[in-house]
Length: 189
Image (tube, rainbow, N blue to C red; front, top):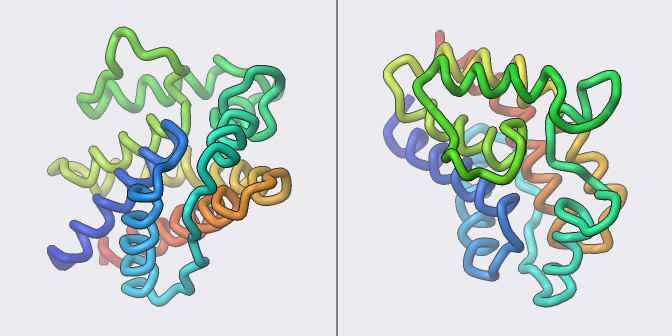
């Protein structure tokens, strides 16, 4: 893997993590658009267009989709998609926590979201890219976690959102996650 591609991948996952942590700013959206386009071009995949967030409307949409109040339209938690109960804080949450710990990563003691929160998983995946044992761990984490639920989450966002920005963010996220398995296989060869 060349250095430029490694830097682009790391930046992409950091930007995706930021986009699911808080409502996106125009600056974040612009950086994400540029980095995602380069990444997808390097892996020869089409880049879905990404517009800029629409101010207060997209702040409200971020909360409607991912935060609340009320029932979340697209809960950004692995356990909601993979547990039989379809609720938070299930075995999937603990499995993710144990995966983090087994690779030397602990969440801040005062974190307010469950360990299987999408932004935490994306942050962890970026962290693995900087570690010596990262490739094997990234392959496992991608297969055992990200690929199993993030595409379904993205589909839910795409069909439920009122925002062109969040629709395109979900399209890019889905494309990146689905591409990562192939990228990791190519790197391992």
